[in-house]
Amino acid sequence: MMDVSNGYFVISLDFEIHWGVFDKKSVAEYKENLENVKLVIPRLLELADKYNIKLTFATVGFLFAENKQELTSHNPKLLPNYTDLNFSPYNKLDSIGENETEDEFHYASRLIDLIKQTKKHEIGTHTYSHYYCLEDGQTKEEFEADLIAAISLAAKKGISIKSIVFPRNQVNTNYLDICSKHGITSYRGIETHKIYNTLDRNFNKKQSTRALRLIDSYLNLTGHNTYKLENLNTISGLTNIPSSTFLRPYSKKLSMFDSLKISRVKNGMTHAAKHKELFHLWWHPHNFGKHIEDNFKGLEEIFIHYKILNNNFNFNNVTMEKLASLV
Image (cartoon, rainbow, N blue to C red; front, side):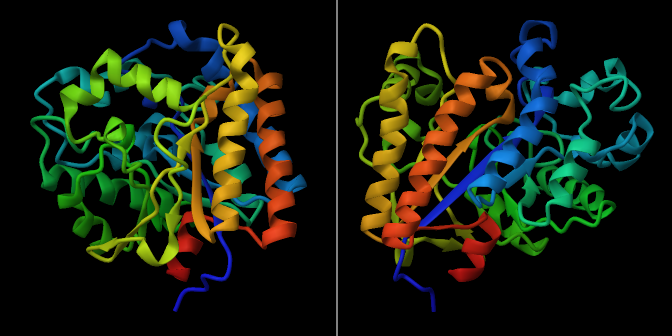
């Protein structure tokens, strides 16, 4: 039975580099953010160490490969057959470099080793190919082939995959039994408020919906999005560890509101600590690639606040895998 005598703080990172945005931006358009991931990850590990924080890195499978030969040899036989061909990263493989030294935008084997060496953070999956589970054309069989490839390439590094974060938060509950079948025990669900609903593809992509999500990062429109631990759903053997909020990157244009954004996160954490609930924060390492100092300044404020809540309310930080095992 789960210990509900305290609340829990989970942080998951969608570790993807260019594979997370390849269908939206070229490397050139987003270069500063992408190339600085190699600075962001070590600094993140250092700061987490300072405040005894454990992170869950949901990592795109492609990034585990040491070179193109290893990558292509792990590609599944069944590729996602998206109606919109722009969603498939397999069309881009010819144009990437041979290895991490040559191409730091599409490989991250050394960074993954760095995370693994700490022996405190979890490395989960963000699918093998940044797979979109709700887009037209792809099938359950194609998703399973993708997942098998991700698990197999991680295993070569001695990493056992236990948690999944679905790219673009496209949670397809019909696919959860596949995850469970292959040993995964948790996934990151979405906030319950309708502005976060990724199932309604058109509503989700509307400018007005995006604007509401932006405002919600600074002002409390949708509540604290914290969750009672005894109410966490387990579907097909997987525990849903839903998101509380996305930590938006520092923006020069919105810098005057940055303290509101950090307060919004801290207030949610305080609510979770006092009510013995879950608070789940997430972002992408590449979000911190620009305005590195400002982003880390905000994050350190959050970590300091965690230590206060940990001391006062026994608010506990765990990885996704650990929380699922407690549930």
